[in-house]
Image 1 (cartoon, protein in one colour):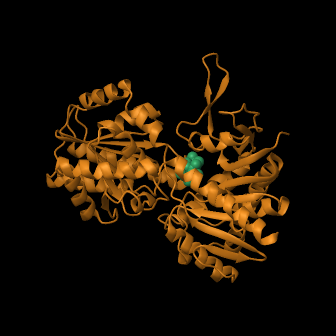
Image 2 (cartoon, rainbow, N blue to C red; image 1 turned 120 degrees about the vertical axis):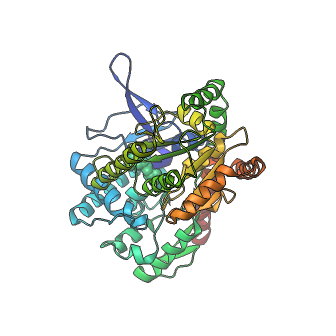
Image 3 (tube, helix red, strand yellow; image 1 turned 30 degrees about the vertical axis):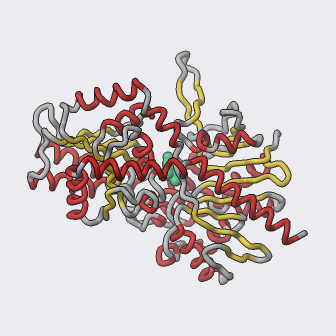
Length: 470
Ligand code: G6P
């Protein structure tokens, strides 16, 4: 087994399987995924990515992707049901997103979560050379840092949570709260999207584990764990390049034509998830139609919803509700050849997304709670023409950075309606001024900057530890 000086551990490998023209299975790098973003850092060292390839077959042996070794972890049908769909996506996901859906607690899901985390920790321990840096990602793998430290105390371990970390009142519901906190504290550096999340984590460590904790460091046994905010970002240059391609620009123009050359095009792009505020948005939109503030011929809404976690019950219920509402609104307000809402429930390729971003006058990103929301940042990156208005929920991590967006509380329907009208009717100079300052921010806060700042903070904890012990 070849070993690496840098190991990334994530639930998913950064590849998708697709069928080649000859019918064979082919593996391609997931578009826009973390791997392209981390490329400069992953290339720097012989790196390995440990993750699940999707599906329930025995772990396939995969070729290297952009020079990065793929180390697959197999999940059985039971693991997928209980670890991925169960504890990760029906317990932790809703709990961490303000319990907008009721989290479900099952003891057998917890057992599966532990088993799968142990398997990932063992795979990482195998792949890491002595003294390597191991960077563990997200809520599926919160026990991995602690398990890995027990196996390999020589490693420098980082953990980054891509989703929100909830306030104590919510986290305290978790039956196995102490174990989860201790698992994360196996890392040398625990990173969050927002400073508030680091604060919540410190408060919980003090309360549940009774250890000394500030918003920057937590003492556990004989170690000091650093904590902090590292807001994740996108590959700005890649999206700018894509959105500037002549075929993408032409496609954006064609989309406007296909939509009947409306005065205003509004766009939303979400995973089909109850955290995204899709129903609230549709309700606000249908009220604006009913009030006569918006007319179907002048204004169109394109709602893209990418299928997600389709076997989880809450996701199936959501899809039914969204589709019923789209049907109702179109039935009530549409005309022949002129639906009120253009609803697309399918995966989208990146060039088509970039064309949609470029075609839309107003982008509505209004989640009820979101760790970051990279769609908001992608829209800004795609607007190389300096145009386009972003309506953004205050409850998305991105709102802390994109302060020039038209910010809104998505629970406040009247506020949502007013803000959308405000964005639709804003003076071009206001729209362009806001877009310019958001683009300026992203230029210096792209994904490469994120990865560099996290890894250098992690390496610093190593230097400090060496200094303290030598
Ligand atoms: C969120 C999570 C990611 C996850 C993604 C897609 O952004 O933070 O870890 O990969 O959703 O969800 P899926 O369940 O398809 O991996």
